Image (tube, rainbow, N blue to C red):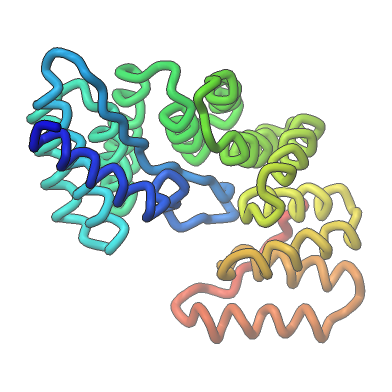
Length: 270
């Protein structure tokens, strides 16, 4: 085995062990939907120009590691180095998109997600990520097509992520029947999916089915760390069920756990 192949295999093994294909880098926000982003997958192929692709893959792996550790500047540097080595690297654009989202630069992130899709138009993870971006930026109905395309990829290893995103975005688009269908299918892949559980809690709350909403809300809170929006919904559900003490406890959690957040107001059912 040539040295650069050995390095690539070591990097690939480390990435698989870290489980990066399932990582979520973007903090979920219920008011815009909890969306699951997927880190790049890495492949080594025998083909002309392999050396450059391996070099790019190494830099993408480094960018992913930096981003996972909160080192945004270093992640950007490594991702740009990957693009220099291989301008056709969809993975590098995916990491640059994630960097931009970390910095609150939504438009720049969208440009990179779109470019990644242009370079890898059939890859499920790439399509899922751009769909999540579209949905989070006011284009929920448009995003559903991309989730469908992601699910059509026979090599896509995490269809539950796309189903959870599709259901959440269908809810945003007012397509409640599709939302429930996709969200329940998502739970078949991952019963603890925070994205699917949060969206199902919202769906049933808006439908006036408060007991079901409570059940999904409690499962969501058990599945992943709370957010102010998830706690807000839990409080509103308890108010509808007449348990004002429980509702107050959730509001107190917002104040205690998220002291810089405003206590949410308004009704998610509106």
